[in-house]
Amino acid sequence: GGSGRSLVTYHGHEGPVYNAVWSPHSSSSFVTCSGDHTLRFWDSRSGAEAVGVSVVHDDEVLSVDWDKYSEYTVVTGSVDCSVRVWDTRVNGSPLNILLGHGYGVKKVKCHPHAASCIGSVSYDMSTCIWDGRAGGAGILARSDHHTEFVLGMDFSLFVPGRLATCGYDRRVTVWDYAAVVS
Image 1 (cartoon, one colour):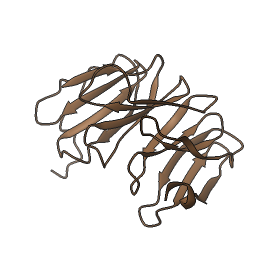
Image 2 (cartoon, one colour; image 1 turned 120 degrees about the vertical axis):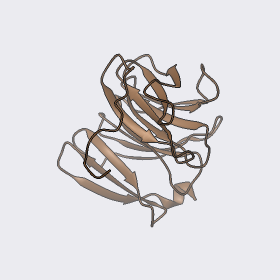
Image 3 (tube, one colour; image 1 turned 180 degrees about the horizontal axis):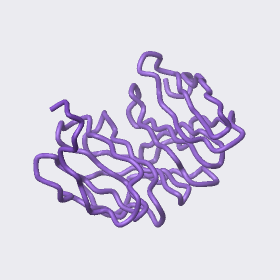
């Protein structure tokens, strides 16, 4: 411990790996997404082989996040312009497909205070807040504050209606959207 050395190296993706996220429900589980169109589920207790693989988009998967309110729900964003909501127990169809971005989705993030609320940013210079429930309202809010690709985002843990985004335009934008998710 403390030496900075790698503990385990995981192999299995057949394209670049864009994101890795630990499960908020299990100390040993994490998920990765890749240019090979897949999610891979890993358990750090069981060695370096994936414990599950799912083809989740028809194009590169750029981002994944785990919903802290549902241990079986993950959200993905892809070059195919969609945000998809998945039940990890079911390999096949997504629970929901959220459309509204004009270019690839660079980052998705599950809301820390509101179940089924998802944020996404895109190469189309927009940020969207979504109702991710099957049969839900879809886009709850949209921001076009950036003039170039939006590359990252995060919800405030301390102010429930606050979001920060950053982009290729060298801007960081903080905005409030509380009315749409309360």
